[in-house]
Amino acid sequence: MAGLVTNDSIVVPDKMLEGMGVTVLRDEVTSVDRQNKKVVTAGGQTLDFDKLYLATGASSFVPPIEGKDLKGVMTLRGLDDAAVIKDAVAGRKSGNIVFIGAGFISMEVASLLVEATPESFNISVVELLDRPLPLMLDGDMAESLTTYLQEKGLTLLTGEKVEKLHGKDGRVEEVELTSGKKIAADMVFMNVGVRPNVGLAQEIGLEMGQFGIKVNEFQETSDADIMAGGDCVEKYHYITQKPVPGQLRGPAVVQGRLAAKRLAGYDIAFPGVLDAGGCKMFNMTVTATGLSEESARREGFEPVTAIVDSRSKHGMIPGMKPWKIKLVFDRATHKLIGGQIVSHDIAPAREIDAVTAFILGGRTIEQLTTFTSACNPDISSEPSAEPITIAAEQALQKL
Image (cartoon, rainbow, N blue to C red):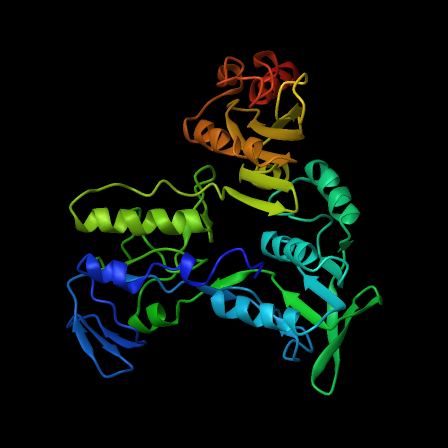
């Protein structure tokens, strides 16, 4: 959408697969005969299988808002959606754009539009909760992000709910909120979540979970010869061990690889998800993993938290940029269970991967007070100010 990459550059070419001995068929599966192990396509082909893998993904969820079918109301889930949005924006030199939902897709697209078409559009973001990126950040970490986005020209309307969309001659022209406020809108983007595509799996008679197709740790469904992975399957959270959607790129990639290993004779179990993710808006990068303080309380933990302001370089080096990290620990076990980073530089935001590794390794407050990072004045703060270590020190004092 921003013109930085081509459509082909983000799709695995058929020729690459075919060169590895894979037969690629562009067709729609209309039915699966589990008993006789046959797949029938809309093109009339019948394929035999020993093992079947379902990767049917998910689709954008459009809430039942009056006016959602008006022209100019769009969602973003794949390349076709991106092309529609790109054409719609290119067809206007100015106007009002409203985003419903302040998740990472909305915030990234909104910031891209501001950068690509500066001063062309009035962009408003409506969010039901009290902050942007509410599933990634606690309120205390979202404050600086909110201020930053507003300074960049975005209008954030938090704690607001969309009541209905008004249109004229079949095209959207206004968004009405339950508070009574009305916002002019030439285009509306709805990005409030996705729903797993499980229609085929249900027709086959596979067991369903709360958030998609139910699979075991080896990606096998209730039929051992049918496997599934990605956004269409239910996952479980590594910390809580409860079912979750886990609809992110990382888990989907790993589940596909684990299914291949299973077919090759390796029994490597999927470890669950931490919902680790990242989002870049202008020059601000936000990353998060595990449980937030808010979600930890909902799950019955008594969280101990620490926030540390840090810097991308030693204070004496020109070009230093600020960033901050929040760590969430469980008071009962002292284990690290979550982390959030808000950074004005990309590199420090990747420290969230270290936080993920520490969670998977069961590291405690006491153990993290001894953590030392690879340090150089040009690439990190001084050793005495390593933020993960300082956060652990602060949490230890709170204990």
